[in-house]
Image (cartoon, rainbow, N blue to C red; front, top):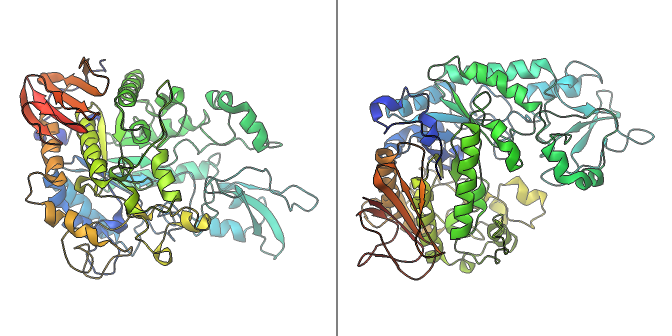
Length: 572
């Protein structure tokens, strides 16, 4: 299969000014509170990131994606934003942000920041103003307020559920102390949804995008990009009615609040702004939509690129990987975008752990299993003893090396270059922070396990994260997989990532691949331009590698044979 060929081999001299730099970039996601702490308060900060720019440079990433760093009460890990044009004082200042951006750019690393446009924090000045204002006021029109049902408005406007459980509506107390209207929140009640029919909301976000672009931000990751526009006129349909209409509703873009057609008018305005800069600012949509509708978010007239999480949700299975890659490359070609590949992020169980868990059998058609193994492990308490750690790491290394060989952008999550396992039951309930743990009354242990601060050294109160401990407890086994422990080991996961990302830079060119026949259903091989071949053995029996110079392998190849759960790159 081939996709649109758009680039010649990259060079450092052309990368910085290349408007297509994002198409095959290696992007490193930083969760700021857990990356590096410079001042000893136990919380990672912007100055901590600046201090680690040499590490990022040696790792070989093209860009950093910064998760929310804005003022926030952390009702949802920073995705509840108090002020879109400022820095949380716990993380630094705008001057610190400028210094960090300057250091990254000086090292040739682009900067992408998270934008959260569907909702604000309930501490945002606009929402506080809305609560103090009367029904029908201009202040309330920036959000979605509705009268309740029932004799005295005591019932919510609909029976819809929020993503985090419970109703999607929350009733307020009016300024005079009486029970009042209801506001909509697709997520937590601390995250009231904006009304994107309001021109003031649209104008303010354009100002925010310009604010950060003028400070040197190169691109934006758009949170919940498919939820901004809504149709809440008249009598709202019931949850049962929405469920009954199912896929047809989504395909037509007629769901009341998910993936409506009108949302693309917003992104067309954003694209006009992005294109005022040289090179144009980039954007990638987090849009959980039907595959037939994802291309609209990745349109050159819109955001330009959209996440696909299909490999993240797949089992370690050759058939699933080949179908997923083929489908997504075709989607990218149709939209004119490049594909995105990701295995781990701040919301999911790390893939080194997922791949060490037992999974249910695939269906006869090889359907993707939706990453249920990691979710099930969390529900069962997240016990380390239930994970085959060695197998999980072998598979994670193999999968990552395959991903780096694919055309498109590769998204890494901090710590995966160390082969970090998820921290599960080692975190006491009393020290957990993820609101999903508390909202679910302890049924699910939440996302804290992938947000534990990184281990930089083999010792110290926080394994080098900072001089004052860490805001989440780190397990003792962090010592053996710290940066310090892996730094000078050729067989370490860190060394593998450094080698692979360096080669990826040298070898990337046209966005094409050609599948190769291997004679085995459990072995995938494909060729990229310049004679670069990637071979992945998903099985257990060794596989005889084709002719060529071995560039890198996730596990040692002996006597020309690639062991199971391993990937190798060869040059013809």
